[in-house]
Image (cartoon, rainbow, N blue to C red; front, side, top):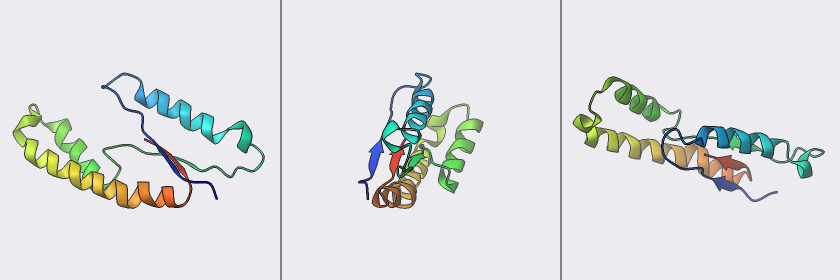
Length: 102
């Protein structure tokens, strides 16, 4: 079994993170060394995650004119989302030997 990997692409808003993530995932899923065996599993993920916490963050941010009004609440929800993401997506996939791109 292959050892799992966790690759994070980070940068400021609108710098091309999503584009680079899609390109990397596409490349890894069709990697020349894996074309015959298809033994590499690639998982694309993001934060905020697709959990209830991530949905709540997006909802709050979409409806606030000044996010500073709820900064403490946003920080607490983000912490919950990160914990959920690590426990339910990142760690299980790494243990399975998958490659995660976030």
